[in-house]
Image 1: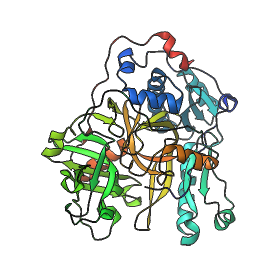
Image 2: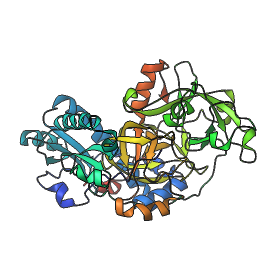
Image 3: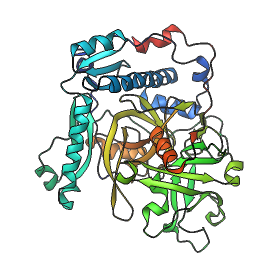
Image 4: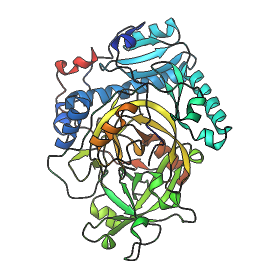
Length: 460
């Protein structure tokens, strides 16, 4: 799904900014990953990590795990000290940072082993301000509100930001825009052994009615599988994007549209592997954009009951758990159009109007990342480390033929950017709506020889 214009996010690479007024303490020095976890990453993903993030596989896994520990600690502060907690992020040098509004809170954070940054206002105050801003935007005339690309919170600069179209009307709003995002060069890659069975990140097609030789080509939708899931009754599901469901794109289309594994030789002979049981997107869905695909026996027999994802029929990574978005955390996206591409979390909560094929738009809330995401990647899986993080929803590069061209065209607007919908929010919402007690399929991470102390240098 296309973002209205280039979404730019505030990420500062200056170590001076991140340490100004900070107590540069390291997080607890305990092993974060094992050697086996490193060696089990597929070759295609290893290539994307080196190409896009300029990291070793071990650095990628360690930084992703560190971000989750920081996220858990930040959640505790968010609940226990809402008036002093002002956000958290992973700095560009890998250090975990917590922003607070008082020196007393900074001392407690430092004692817990995290770097601190002094901020003027709390996260709660910023969220309240953004809520008021969003409410104000809804009161504007449609031709004016359409000039607003997104609203978000910039935790690094401790402010609410609004991204507007560079047009006469947009400029007349006289509102601040986001700073240029950290640029990550991305391009498709491949390598390593390939499992022929369909997995997360691979292609599926869908139509409003059963697929026949008479079905017009323009009526066939193309998306990517997200994460496989299982219900309390043992039923098999896949979690993907809501806008991939024809019922969301077209008026008068009932729920339950069929989902097919495409037959490249003859699309009319594609195998139906399930149906859209449920989908939601926009404000009525709490800002989410997700779908629940109920898999049939053919889908299970094809292999969609495994805890695995990959990009564009390439090599495979096993999902070991779920995660939450943390600013600065490394992420890698899988999708059938652009394979594995990697980047970082630019913002953990962004409100963005997504343009629909029928000319309307829906306001969704997700996290912003610097990964390149192309048309057809929608619904694909987003990982941090080997944990499930979210589902691809929108991108400013959806119309590009490839990521190389997207980077060239969008360079002046801050580079490629995408919106992901947090997987934990999707599961919570789906379970509250459907009552299936869905869980993302995962496999426990190997617990063998811990990584050496030298490998933890990024924590210092």
